[in-house]
Length: 349
Ligand code: HEM
Image 1 (spheres, protein in one colour):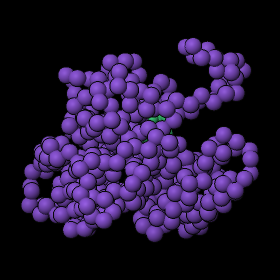
Image 2 (cartoon, rainbow, N blue to C red):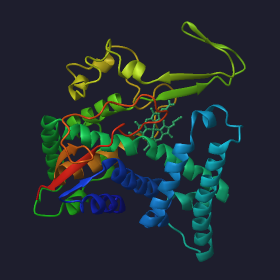
Image 3 (cartoon, protein in one colour):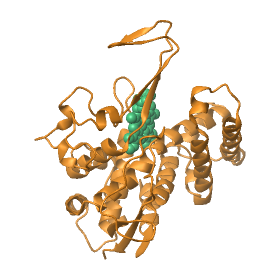
Image 4 (cartoon, protein in one colour):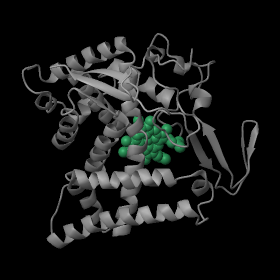
């Protein structure tokens, strides 16, 4: 936890009186937190190495075209680009593992567990790619969206600010200490205890409902055709389901394109109107395995932003925006807003 607090507080704490692109800065921090928790402490301690890996990931994202997903055997230009980027990624992990072995160091991190288990460098690389990809793809977009959604809804912004101020004070009431010091009293379990920050939790759920507009895919890799309701899914077929079919469905969610966290309040509970109406963390037998960690990261970054700054959403020339641009539903992955938005910050203290 001290390293996670340090990386997040140092990066976000040094932004005073400026305009930032949260869709650039948040992914940097989230990537570093994910590397710390799931991969290697050495890489996490080196911001340049983290940013170089993040650049590879952005390249991999851009090269993940429908062609590479649907016809993975076709070695076209995007496939070649992915291969080249994967090689760069492999080299970084390979060098880190080899250096550690050569120097006989024994670190307390997930990479060490995999080395001790006797996994090969290629297996360790595959694990790192999978976990860093799943660990970043959604969180790095949802976290900045949530802060922007709060900034365009001042009533919620002040409610969340009051809630997080009270939350921090319940662990360390000494407001004369720096925020980074006060946070050290809060454990991972405290952040992820259900109901610990109910207003922020509803706001996060609403941002996910509104902003995660992506297709989910399932391959029928059984030997049989499967009947799903009125649809027959032949074996070998990929079924795609777009989350907006439920998340933006006016029969379930009132005014579905409005950001309205109260729809998840116990009194309204719109997501309980129909079975499986909220798929933000996945459904069925394969829900999100990183929900707890993602919630921790997003709560931490949001807490820092609202506690440290007054925030305003502006367009690229600095003109204030009263609302966020509409969601792009044509992307295969969760994506930043179609038109770039920035945050204008002024330090609160
Ligand atoms: C706001 C952040 C996140 C959201 C909204 C989110 C959402 C989802 C969704 C909707 C699925 C199901 C996909 C499907 O059914 O095809 C999923 C699966 C998964 N997520 Fe997340 N996720 C987030 C963050 C994370 C993080 C931080 C990690 C890991 C560090 C993670 C790891 C996984 C894994 C491993 C699966 C696959 C589970 C399986 O197939 O059994 N996620 N996530």
